[in-house]
Image 1 (cartoon, rainbow, N blue to C red):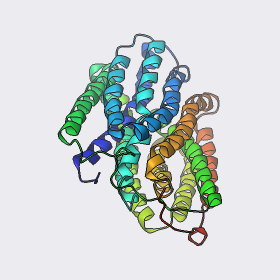
Image 2: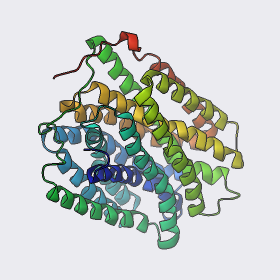
Image 3: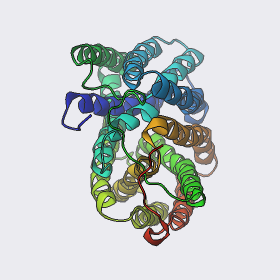
Image 4: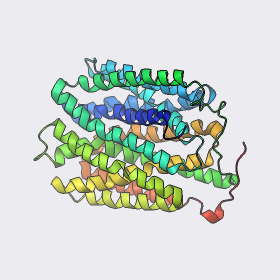
Length: 399
């Protein structure tokens, strides 16, 4: 698929919805603590099973995409996540909501191993397409806080799940219509691809080193991403209490931070197509560590620009591992490579929720940001272990 086609637009919309749905609860929880008379720390763990499903579901999704149909899996994603979010809006207890959030996570797991493999298919340069797709995903993160706040303040918390669910179902039906009217042009199953993206062939020990670094940085990066995106509405609730009077205001500040930061991916994508991944990765991680450390010393309105700064580099890191996989994983098993990265990243993301609740309840957010600075430093050190250009032996892969 070329990125100017409607097919690429559907993939971008899918990435937006994927991140939007998994973060509705992050803002809804600020209101549900009152509805169900629970503390923030007590309520947050109910989202954990959904993120576990988000992680482990990537493996069967990637396998089915490679063996059956990537387009078919995308259609299931749109319809399944929409139906389950609508059901979540009908929950009457925390346990019921946790059950439906788990189903949301199960269908959300489809996108990354399937959608990303479709984005990079038939491309020589993958940095910018992945970055453009990533911006849509991050705008989903940004919009989740804002739109959830608006819907809750205007129509109640249930609407925050039901309205997006109905929209996703509508998009899924349009996607099925698109596939029906374009029966051959937009097929990208591994077995049916006419043209596959070549991967760089490396000695086995270098390939193992690269994928080891991808998995390590995906794990630590998943912890950083989840901790920041999930907790930022609560951070602003505490830090900006004097100027953020309701959930919509809190969501607006979170939207500002996420939306501005989203476009860092486009800059990073351009750099990845022109500079070495190793150097770009190291700079991004080093700046993450710097701004996380600065956040431990700030409160009030001064925290807002620093929050935007660290989110710039948290979001900026997202396309890097995806570009590495696109470079070194052959098309026939690329969905499974993305699935493996996803399960590592999202498994850690699931564990981040109880960790955030525990750290916040015990020490507060300053300890959290100090820990994230250490995590970003580990990513920086791992990036320096990527092979240099001199170590590589470039040759087109045929298998």
